[in-house]
Length: 216
Image (cartoon, rainbow, N blue to C red; front, top):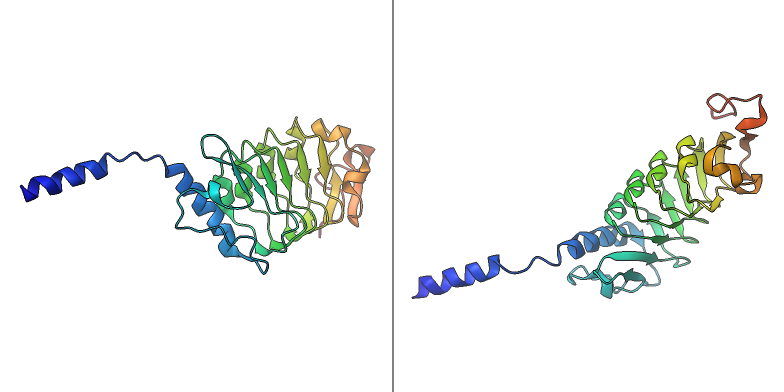
């Protein structure tokens, strides 16, 4: 009888619904960010990895399916680096991390956030190049990377972001010329100002995009 009871318990556990799977993946992704940053004001104190559902955490918004759709940590006085695990938040629409002290590169994995509408990383200390993988964000409307230390050329692939309405990469250290094709045709030079090594639009007729500007 005891053996039958044990078998019944094992069967019951194995048939337990696996609903929290997505919550676990997304919770792990968010907790990876918490581990990568310093948080002197304890704004991430509620991010408890023992809680299966990250939808109960402050600054996190979820949809009716319990999937993360917003991360609101603008002006939160956090420092540290971004993590590639954020690319696992498949339904994330708003990634708001502006006005902090984040440093290091923008992870190329953010290009996997196919639902993303707004990417606001402005006024941090981010460095490195703008990942060309961001061109996969077909729903993106707002891309604000201004006020960082980003360098290198502006990826020409970004011009295929057909829904892009606001672009700001000003106040960085970008170089070369800036694209004016596709969705970039609507943006003025204000979007690119205060990049000392950026030499102007590629359609001036004299400078080819692939060779123009000083990127040494």
